Length: 342
View 1: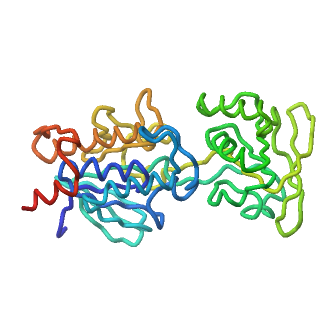
View 2: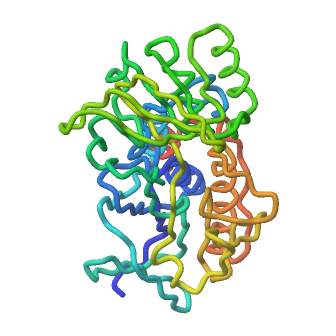
View 3: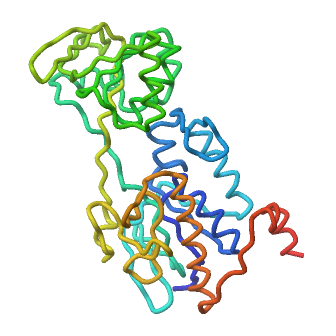
């Protein structure tokens, strides 16, 4: 192997992008791999306009904007992005790891950080016979253009964060109905409270406990009505222009499952103070990492990225701990790099 690089980050979502910054602060150079054609992971591919409320310092930030800010933060450390490049193999050597992609091209790294989230995601779809007629025309599993729904009748199905967040975000812009099979919602308590407040103020309508049963419209995919029913068999019809179906995502780790890592369910099991996996020189952060009492929050992934970077520094410097510095003490990354070059 001609060249052994510093760090490979597999996954260019928010946590993967912040990992570039965390490693860069320790003068570790990163290559970032992702099978998608752009950085951002789920935030870019599935819900670029989804509002996010739990990023410190941002009471409200759209997913795409967060990705842009993280990419800007990583830029001074000059990461190399390998987009539309799916890593399918990992093999270990004495003091480095070799990654292989689908085309058979290989690269060597001193350490690898998995930031793959839950793997490849596909939406759970409702069991409706004519669903395909309306998909990507009036039935959507993610929001890429919120302006599409302004002034329209929108039926939002589901009880998790995506359903509740979008119901609240669209309440002042569209005629929103929220269909959920239970009276209780699984979103964060603050957003559930906001949802009920909007319902009480007649800004949206909660349709519970009902499930999506049928779609009625034209052959060109134009939707007119949706049918909903309770478990007891009670039914009603709702006029609708669009359906947003948020029934969760099915994720698969794919090739990662074959890399000899300790797994539990769909998580790569790690030591939580170092984010080290069961395989030497391989670390996992973000939603791909599992440990007891794990919280799948972006902000927790940011912390995990810093822990992994610190441990990799020790690994590559014979156990020597990095002299810890706050980013404010170290200064602006671009200025710091310029000083180091002089």
